[in-house]
Amino acid sequence: MLKRNLIGLLRSHELTGDKAKDPLLKSHYYKLSREKAWEEVVSTLKKMQGYKILHEVQSVGEIVLEKRTVTGRTMDVTVSVINVNPVTSAVDIYSASRGSFGDLGSNYRLILDIYRTLDKKLAQYKTSGV
Image (cartoon, rainbow, N blue to C red; front, side, top):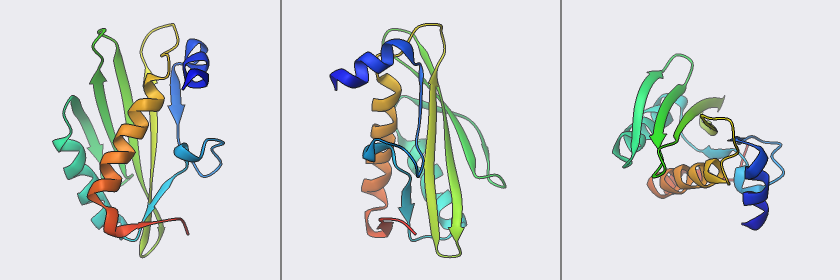
């Protein structure tokens, strides 16, 4: 956690992906078609407290959210639902804070919070990868 705060002094964004060094920031895979995964992810994000959906583009598989922190900072979050194959989808997240200084790891924690919520809702479909 200290390392995340130190990194957060300089960096005000965080993203997930297959090649992420941190295992908690690896893409999450679900045994669902992209359409079904999209429905589940959107409905879950709409129920999360403190997040405002700015727009969703189903054809591209992106949902753009906004979250305001207690200190008044605004964080922009893009959740991508990616079709891996006909029965598997991946979810990746990019989060960035507005402003010039680092985020003290808040984007990292925000991503973990979204993944935790999605994993709880889609636990029966979670898989380790392709």
